[in-house]
Length: 252
Ligand SMILES: NC(=O)c1ccc[n+]([C@@H]2O[C@H](COP(=O)([O-])OP(=O)(O)OC[C@H]3O[C@@H](n4cnc5c(N)ncnc54)[C@H](OP(=O)(O)O)[C@@H]3O)[C@@H](O)[C@H]2O)c1
View 1 (cartoon, rainbow, N blue to C red):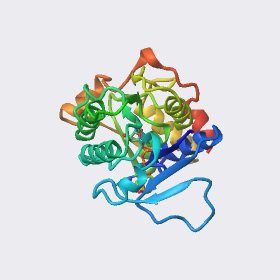
View 2 (tube, protein in one colour):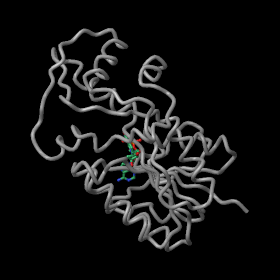
View 3 (cartoon, rainbow, N blue to C red):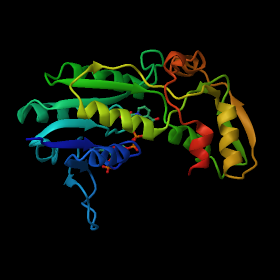
């Protein structure tokens, strides 16, 4: 009998699309969230918990055969959170653990990327069957980098930095496919269809939202920004996404 699939971070940008894809495939889905269960009818199960404290984690992993781990604290705590999840999962069986990570995390020494790298190791060493998919930045994130500055008369952009953003719907398609398949280890990375300068991407957001702003290119010091400038986070050989940034903006 097929069991339930747990999606951590099933309320997030990526996770909520993954949940929908798995439901569309006819699977029973459970979401773990720190929020209380919404009052409205849900087509899936809901467990309120917190992977940082471990609250609700055992209830979330109980009786599942697959876990798609999309939750992120956006910081160092991702290692603890992933370890807590993997240890709880192992107490309840040997579910397939599917993890979403980021392309080029060895090349760019951003503390968040360091924690993703360490969390990947936790997955690999967990004793669970596993699959890891790395992708480039989502369109949503790249758009947000401009949109958070909307009240400023000038928009800061990273000088000399390009991005290869990918559509979260395509990442969710692949992640759901991986979750429904056998454990595959580290699978080929997924990058967006185009590499464009940050300045160009910011201009596209301004155009799409009908705003006029001056762009202020900033050349930031430090190894992290040098890593971005040298394109460590880009994967031109894996430009497999098809939905462009402009198409994403037009569709919102
Ligand atoms: N964004 C990108 O450009 C990008 C690119 C490549 C890979 N990724 C990876 O994709 C994954 C999802 O990213 P996203 O942008 O979709 O994230 P997001 O929108 O920020 O969502 C984060 C999710 O994590 C959950 N969460 C946070 N802290 C938690 C905790 N302590 N316990 C349980 N759940 C917790 C949140 O759920 P509640 O608030 O409901 O608790 C939320 O659903 C991350 O692992 C990220 O590293 C992202």
